Structure formats: C-alpha cells, structure tokens
Length: 283
Image 1: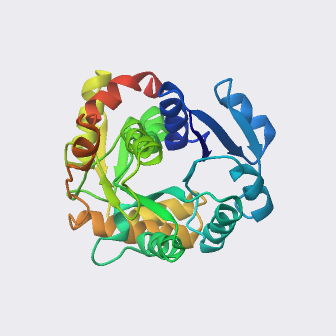
Image 2 (image 1 turned 120 degrees about the vertical axis):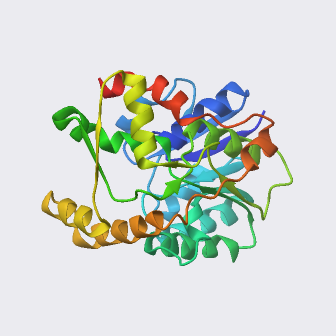
C-alpha cells in the first residue's frame, strides 16, 4: 500500500483525487493551511498543516510519502521551488502537477504564461514530473450561479469560441494513475472532456437539465472585464481574464485530446452528466 500527499485536498480536483486514491486502497496525507479544514475531508487520512510558502512544513508533509499531487491557487515559482526542496530532502521523486492547456496555446495567454513559467521550474528540477494540462473545468459553470439565481441569465465573453470542459472526476482518475503507476515521468497529458462546446451550448445544456430557461447574454471581453472590476475584481486579474476570453473567442482552446480515454480505458464524462449530477446546486 502506497501513501500520497495531496495538495489542494479540499478543492474540486484535490478532493476528487483523495476519494479516488482511497477507493484504490492507498493511504492519503492531505496538506491544509488550517487544521479546521480537516473537517471537510474523509476520515482515515493523515492531516498535515502547512503552507506552500513554508518549505519546512512541506518537508514535514512529504516525509514518508511515495508521491505528491501539486496544485496552486496561483502559479508562484517560489512555491514550486519550496516543493522541489522538500521532495529532495525527503527523497520523493514523483510529483504530478496540475497544469493547464493554456501553457501550450499560441499566442500564450497571460495566465498560461505564468503557469508555463512555474512548470519550467519543475522541469528543471530533474525530478519525475507529470503535467496534467487541463482544459476548462466543468465546475467553472458554478461561477454563473449568482446571476442565474438573481436574473435567470449568464453573462459570457468567450462565445462563439469553444473549450472542451472536463469533469474533475476525470482529472482525478488520470492523476491517480500517474501517481500509482510508473512510466509517466516527463509526460504532459491534455486532460479534457469528450465535447468541444461554446459557453452558449453549455448554458443550453444546463437549462435543459434544470428544465427552465436561462438567458445567454454575450459580452465582449472588454465589457466583461469592466463589469468584473465594477463588482470588485482587481483590475490586473480582470485584465488577465479578458486576455483569456479573447483567446477563447478565437477558438484557440477547442482542442480535443484522447489522453483520458487512452490512459484510463474509460471515456471522460460529458458536460450533461456533470449538470445532472450537480443540478441541485443551481436550484
């Protein structure tokens, strides 16, 4: 029985991975910044309290594990360096990094460039790194929740471009595979769902599942950025999202890969399946 450290264990992806590893019979240690967050996790797993900015806490968390799942809220290279230092100190060689398809799109989006720089830090480490380059996450649809409830509308700036939304369940399946089996070091996999969809098409699917109309309101990337700033979003972040929406509108992220199916033998879940599973969240 192997043991793995999961960073981001209380989030959408990390939480799904914790469940996947436990179901496969492995032990899990979860890194949390606050011990109270352990209440959100399944019983029977180790809890390590620490922070990506604290190399010593990462070293303590990585002691005695066979591999690490690494993710960040922001792609800070210094945090990656702390993880590498901890891995070298504890003898851990295997790290699965949550990355983004934005790191390989042309032109590079601002957010993708930041993640690519972080990935290069891991690449230069000489450790056994696997990169999971995810497309749009299906749970991002929950960002529409407030305006759906308040107005029955979704405001979007990516139409008519397509992305290929992926369920966090499928990311977790590939992450568990890369952690528990050999042969994935140095590989970068594109992790996406089975369908390239516009945001308008996603809203139509969600409305059909919910059995009620949702109005789709197209905005330009600049209009949505301004709307976000007026609602309190920092201008720098709103600008980065504007840049990303411009790339989406151009259709640059509508790339479909078979990596999930080829690696696991099971096709990824559809956006409709995700909507059906999470319909109560929108009611």
